[in-house]
Image (cartoon, rainbow, N blue to C red; front, side, top):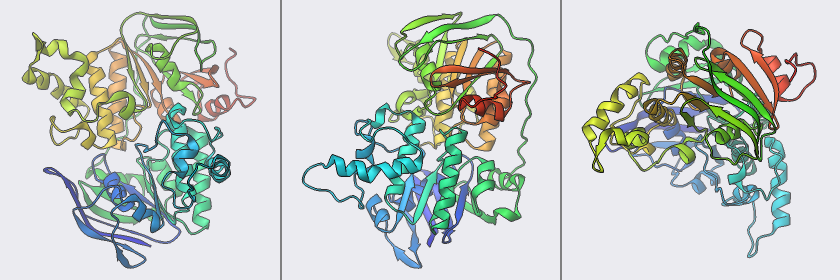
Length: 484
């Protein structure tokens, strides 16, 4: 159905793609894998028409085509769900679905009833229950991801590119997506699935193409390979998957939250000790991100008390909107919170700035062409590392990490896990939100489960299981949860 031959793309002196090749069969799920910066998202954007290649050719059903815009791709039956969502936050969910949609007939006047009828089935299919007139900016990042999926479904694409589609989805929403993918396959839709999550790839993909440093290094049948083999091909070396590290006893209480109530949260109470990782679990919309916003002073607290012993830092879920200045450089984004340390009389000492950031960036294995490059030119995973580097330089006593490994490859995840464990051993109090239950179980000493803004359950590491957490998050009976 689709072939990409010798695709090349460079940004300045950096080659994002240098001779990448790819082909897609009818009705298959084809995974596109590689480390951060390997060129996966760039190739997907070229196929979707939002980025123009510097060279190479694209064939649709054996015929060479020119894809110069997203509308060109849509006319060819190609749709995409981006990792960094391209929604209009001030428009409603319905308006986001119909804008530029060739399947929705536009008139001289907006026909709200017709838009409601057109959009509702696709929102339901994606598992999003919000009203059609809800502004997209009021949805959580996970709900926005579902909205982007609904929009792609509404365009009736025969080829659907999905770039990290479960990066912000909890297990229940991810399961719904997998069911959607199975249904699309039965209808003959072909899916290009970009993901770092090997369990997902081995569950739903038929084949996988591996990119490394912008080049295609191999395509394999999933049934005839292994996770270890794909990871080795991705990184060019063996990657050791570290097990949960032992930590000493927790120290004094660093953060105490008592009856915290906001517009979203209802009477949330818990404590976090120095040297402890407290996992925060819950479905999309359960209040996980809102908890971080309340603790950081971004959301108004209606009632309750927050007692913190030391400074507080927040790594937000949406790094592009809430975390990074996309037009500023890697260096500027990394050091912006600690400029008084490297400035005098209002002037920043660039040499001192680089000397401060370089070792932190090296510890996170940050891959960027230059510290002076705009952060927008980095892959999603490397953008996340820049944000983490900023807070490592600030060095707060309490750190709230909201899905810190979203869109990060398997090798880089090990770097983040090591960082979290080192911070805990150094006596930091860590609150960790994650949409991946194995990650929560791997890193957390205790886990708090939220459901509709309330604490639904609490578990020590020894008693927590994926089944118990999911049951509590969905308010199912028989969770075995500790009484509240």
